[in-house]
View 1 (cartoon, rainbow, N blue to C red):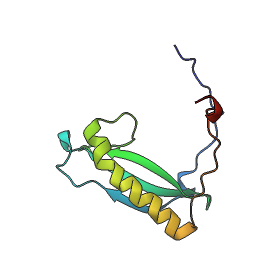
View 2 (tube, rainbow, N blue to C red):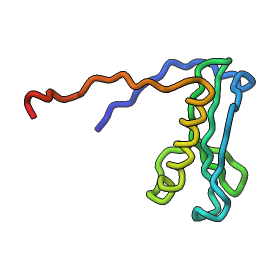
View 3 (tube, rainbow, N blue to C red):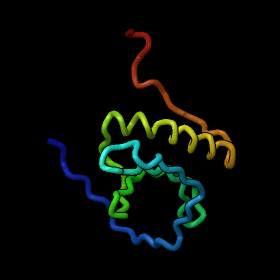
Length: 106
């Protein structure tokens, strides 16, 4: 079993969270009338970040955790749009990574 991760408790000021862009799935696509939301948010004028959420028929808004295959299929194009929007507005996203394997041993 995995151990529990403890995070330092920092205060979040909702008034500093700015929505720069958002797109929602069409109502009726997903079971139970859930709507998935992809947002680009900037906290305190910081680096834009992508957040995924779920809007319930009751109006409750939740961060998106586990998803069904259908939900993933529906949200992937929205994630692509969000990445494209960030690249258009703030420049290309550079991926700097090293291989996690040793190619000589393959």
